[in-house]
Amino acid sequence: MAKTPASESRNDMAQELRDAVSARTLLLVVGVALLQLGFIASYLGAFHHPAPHRIPIVVVQPAGAPATLVDGLNSLHGAPLRASAVGSLSAGTEKLRRQEAFGVLKASPTSSVDRLYLASASGPSTASAVTQVLRTVVVSQHRSLSVKDLYPPSRGDHLGLSAFYLVVGWLVGGYLVASLLGVSVGARPANVRRGTIRLGAIAGYAVVSGIAGAAIAGPWLHALPANLLGLWALGALLVFTAGAVTTALQVVAGTIGIGITVLIFVVLGNPSSGGPYAYSLLPTFWRSIGPWIPNGAGVSAARAITYFGGAAVAGDFFVIAAWALAGLVVAYAGLVVAGRRRARLNPVGRSGPPAGPAGPPGSPAAPSARAPGA
Image 1: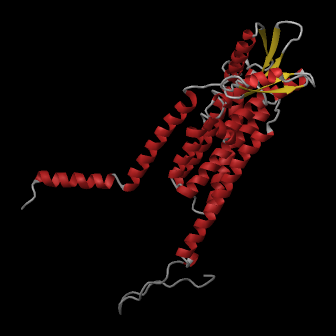
Image 2 (image 1 turned 90 degrees about the vertical axis):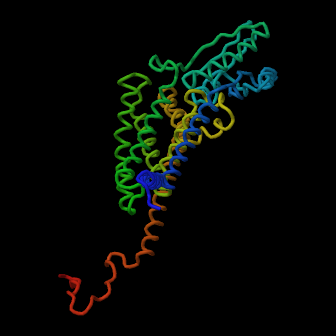
Image 3 (image 1 turned 180 degrees about the vertical axis):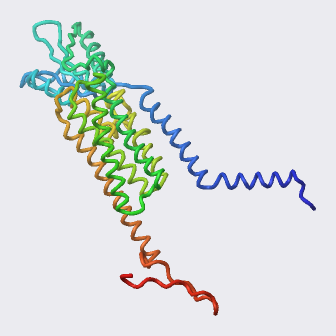
């Protein structure tokens, strides 16, 4: 039975569809859909119902005094606070400076007014939650609360989000430049030398974009108190870390590695960073992973550098540097393994392909290899 033009057209269309939508393309589309849904679930899961959970505060309490107030705060319904005692107001404010506590409560033995000292630069949402909880407690005891913010955000950082957006910008730049290098010259570098060149290019980009981001946030827009050198160091490290991790994942997984990078830094890292809401206001999963991802460590370090004189910033830098080192180790290990695999598959190496079979009698002879030194 002869095929009609209509049936031939349908067959051609089906063949075109099979050629266009390969199994690899379908897998990539499914991966994008999972990332999209993961983004929605992660952000809504983290932010849809922020609630205080064991926010660390300290209570100024003389040595030997009964821990009645501390015990009462720790037994509040829902455990919104985690209170501990310090012997003096200066010891409490030092914990504020090191971002180890979000409030210092000093109960007055001679009046009905208790004092609360805050550091809202470490997270305005958390400072607000602490104030609300403690105000409810003191009002129930027919007392009042006087609040003093020792470390407020700058005028250009009214909502306390500038550090978060600065860190996000640096990380986005790091994984985008690594992704673009992969798209333009191949997801996996051809060899160790090419990998070193790519990582060197990312390092140069990190130095330049680190100082540029610090200048925009500080001297230009005054979104953060200017500490150009400290922010430059942080920005360069964050950009390089994101680029190194992206390169490592491309070496291991090819183009799919870019998607894994987005999963780490965007889907998981941003909502758990403590930027919009501090860790103590997030659900357990995001609260647990936040400090160990470069996003969270970067936000904490940026706030420490700009508002708290760099107090306790070493731990945050250590977390970020550990990710950078892991990226380098995985990238080079993957390149070495790939190089050895290629060497096994092509044992001839640089000497060229083996000679082909001799041609038929009378055919032109193949050109001979040059003698050494020719």
